[in-house]
Amino acid sequence: MNHLAPATGAENRWHLPNHAHVVVYERSSGKRGLLTIYDCGAAQKPPSAQLLGTLEAVDARAELEDTPTGRVVSLREPGVLEALDGDRYRIRRR
Image: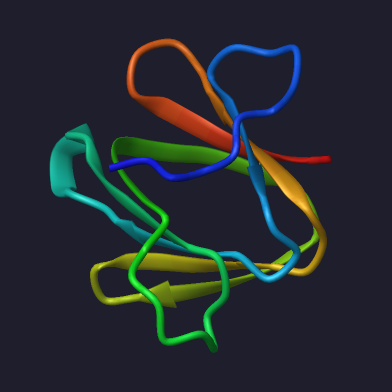
């Protein structure tokens, strides 16, 4: 399930809105986890996307909160989710 808007002129890149929340479920021993992406943390809507993999970096203004199962990334500016090699992702400033 991936309902994110693709970034123009680029493959494997998707726009993230200003208040997107990315819930990262991390698994031990370097195995890939689960990224669940919501358009807004306050909206009572289903996720826009769920991706298997790891979030390597966040290069956009965001609040990071550690949780027992991983972390939550709350964007404070529009961003772009970019797929790296394999099942690794990063969030960049738009």
